[in-house]
Image (cartoon, rainbow, N blue to C red; front, side):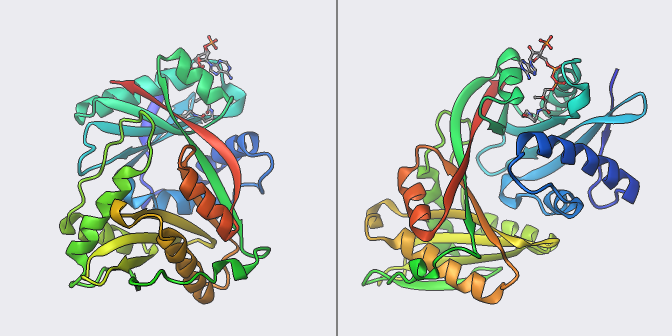
Length: 326
Ligand SMILES: CC(C)(COP(=O)(O)OP(=O)(O)OC[C@H]1O[C@@H](n2cnc3c(N)ncnc32)[C@H](O)[C@@H]1OP(=O)(O)O)[C@@H](O)C(=O)NCCC(=O)NCCS
């Protein structure tokens, strides 16, 4: 019988962080043997400064005989995706194949049903890894593949980022809150990310409004995440493209690329490349302690992947996305 407890990222004691980190450390070792070991700071930073746009985050830990054996992180997206919950379960390697993952998932799913969610998805499952086989056994469907791309800032030829802005457009940038005179046009442009291929994932297009933009900005502020935006504006004052990047407290060395999107009518002018290049020049000039940029995108999103290669990113890994009705 598992003892499932809510884990409070803002009030957890040092001892609770120690045991959670120990679990995540050993799972990371197994899943990413080629990467440097996960640090305690990374564990804390990732949970305290979650992916804001993925919605409310819940964390649960599972104990057996007083020992932490698994943890689950759940995101509850809002604004057009209230049917969905995204779940990430990790079981301590030495106690796998004992039914812990399955029992934990059932408990978590009951709590998600209580919150009115009807679909559950798992993202970032290592291709060919245990998570895929486990999910398959539990009746999940494979719906999408994503890739992780990393840019090593120490090695990259920054000349790749000298990209001219296509004529007729100008770039506008900000840290934190969008300027009042652009926020409506910006919210409208954000809907363009809904065109990014998501396979058969149940994650639908987000309903972007100025209100959601302001709520998301407030969440970034609360979590002390520096969040920057570069947009492309056409002569009529419309926002026709955007790209975002962030840096989290306790993880200064890693910049995280956020959404990039160009409105359909303005594609094919290298606006995506120009905006991303401008973002890289700007962010790295101020953040000299940054060592890497991480980004994830759909495996079928060949244009975005190619833009990233031009800027110096390498494709590191592919992951699968699985989905099941609750
Ligand atoms: C996936 C994971 C959570 C499974 O936890 P677990 O407690 O070992 O899983 P269970 O014991 O409940 O497995 C139930 C069934 O799934 C299948 N399964 C689980 N792991 C498997 C593996 N490595 N290979 C083949 N089948 C596997 C089996 O059919 C198993 O039943 P069996 O042992 O009687 O054959 C765990 O391996 C893990 O933490 N992996 C890394 C993170 C991850 O990928 N999480 C899933 C994303 S949400």
